[in-house]
Image 1 (tube, rainbow, N blue to C red):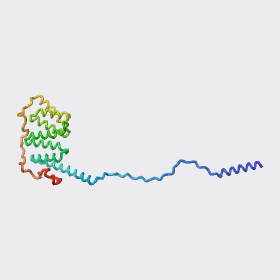
Image 2: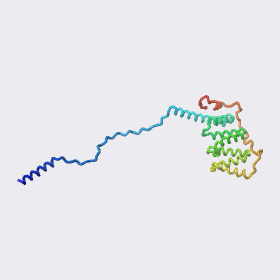
Image 3: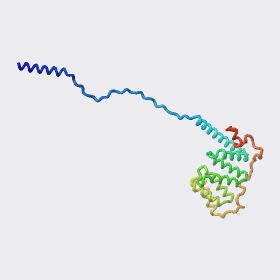
Image 4: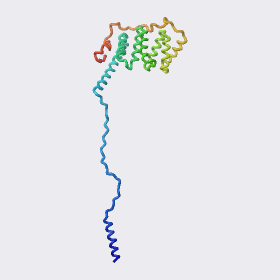
Length: 235
């Protein structure tokens, strides 16, 4: 009897254990998030306003006009029409004072003055431009500095020439002009200073066939005269 009761209890316990649901192990997995499609990066381009476009267009026209004026001045000089070329180059300096070719224009002006037997004006033009650098000339002014020193030397203005050559040596010691400057300085220090009458007052006799004043060639209208007529480029 007791044995039957024990077996019955064991049978009941076995059935109760089998009836309980098995516990699932806990997992730390998170529910999968939906993958969002990635957007392609769009390149942005600068957008100019109407004012910006006008400024850009105006600058392009301005530079084109400067190139045209410079080319015409060179053409007049090549044709030995020095008076007209001089006026053109002077107009260029007034119209484009900060242009990168200003130093070249000043050199042409000084050269024309020498060809017209006016060395004093050539000196004045060179000194006026070089003075703007306050004793620290830029590389673009190097040829003008050498030209000024050479002109002062040829005109017998040795004290001024010595000072200019010394400035050239200090500012551009490795330049080609520095070698000539060293020789000239040694020469001037070894020889007595010439008198004013010994200086070269007429550095280059005029042998060209310059156009007579008042008979300028075609397309010789000054840039300043065309200020109110727009930016027409001359051929």
